[in-house]
Amino acid sequence: MKHDGVSFYEKKPSGDTFSIISVPLELGADERGLAETPEYLRKHGLEHMFTSLGCEVGERTTILCPKPIGQASAGTMKHVQEIATVGKRTRAAVERAIKRGDKGLVIGGDHAVGFGAAAGALARYQRLGVIYIDAHPDANTHETTISGNVHGMVASAMLGHGHEMLTSLFPRFVKPHHFLFAGLKDFDQAEIDYIKEHQIPAYTALDIATHGLAPVAEAIERLSLMVDAVWVSMDMDSIDEHYAPGVAMTSPDGLTRREVLGLAHHIGRRCNVIGMDISEMVPAKDKEGKTASLAIELIARFFGHDYNWYSSYMDTYRQTNIANEPEKEMVRRGQASLR
Image (cartoon, rainbow, N blue to C red; front, side, top):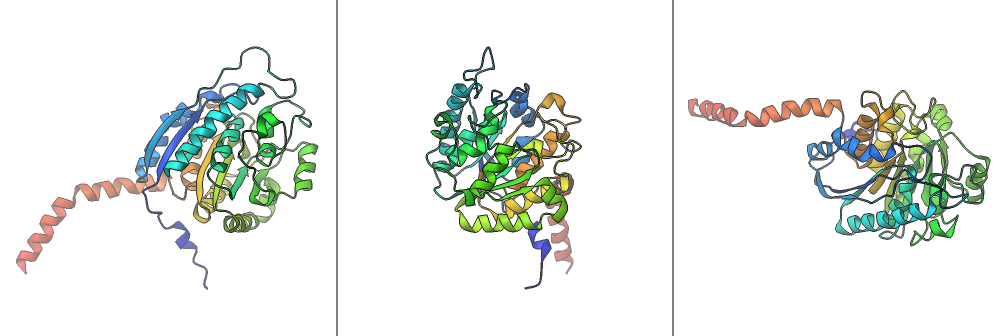
């Protein structure tokens, strides 16, 4: 069959309903300001994006998150009790959204929002695939962590490894061959050992820079055939700081804009994405709204839609054509009467 690349850009039918679950959590790491992200994305047009695509926002939920005050609740797992509590609340909200038939969008906060996000999806799908896009594998446990930051234990907990306070959030675990890392570049040795030991598919930022998106795109296709649904866990620090300056840990050599949008486009068109979490943005660090705009564009693509400057530009003409439709109809009738 002849290659037909343009079909990949055909407009997806509208009609999706989304539940937006805001989780202003900033206990998983030492960075502050991440809790402002849900409101920041709203101000930059998150909900306008959905309505312009013909989608609906069915429910808006904000998860109560304690503020980082005083000493951490565990030595090698900072604030783990509080994070586990937020995880339970998030899990319930995601499970409820998917049960209704909504797509789930979880907005962090730090990447520790991923515990409850993926757990809620796993409660509804036995064969769930997870695509984890991050500069860091987050595959430490309480036994291997150097920093004690719990946001660095999310992936390992999804796969069933780590402290019981975190693994108990999950009704079942993701199988290693149903898990896919993309964009990795900053590792602890324990994380490298973990990925190799469990044979988890992983594509680094260097892999993508060297070989392009083809190998990881093939891996995404294989994953989509093995699972019933896919959850995307998107850490914005996987993107080069030139394109995403407003993140907790900036990446001077992360994914380019074209790489990450191409990755999102392929996932959205090839996988049954039932939800995603997006995290690690610090609005105070953003420049001219670059990170927020890119995040909103990525969200649309992960769900199989396309939202960018060109689509907004053409929408102006579409709206003008609709407004002029009565006048055009009068002209058509006049022409018909002359015949």
